[in-house]
View 1: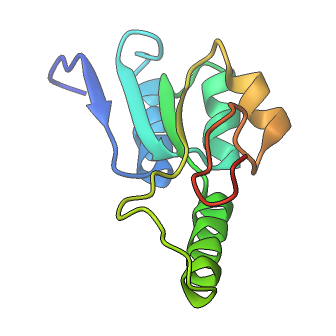
View 2 (view 1 turned 135 degrees about the horizontal axis):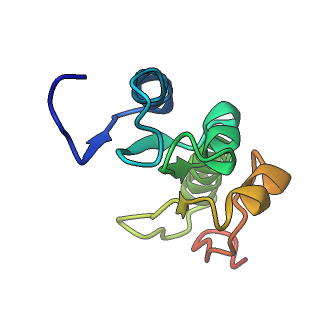
View 3 (view 1 turned 180 degrees about the vertical axis):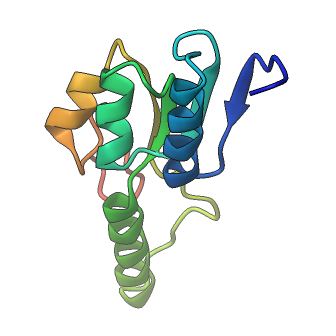
Length: 117
């Protein structure tokens, strides 16, 4: 690594894990931040190990469930919100073990506007 970046943001965890490997090969783990998106199991473990700085976890099972719940509500003639937020969470070394233990479910509570939970 010939330049001195302060950090990298990767659009998905696979890219982030590759960048983290390159940072480690350059002997710069802990000196250069690497943040990715998805929150897959390998990324969560990498965050816990201090290789990835963080990942923004998305929850595809929850996103799918929200989609099905929205379809069921519409078919039942119910009104649904025009926008439905799915859960996300910033996973850092401080909460990585919680995220791993709950995987693939969210480790933080969120308000589901379609189920009232």
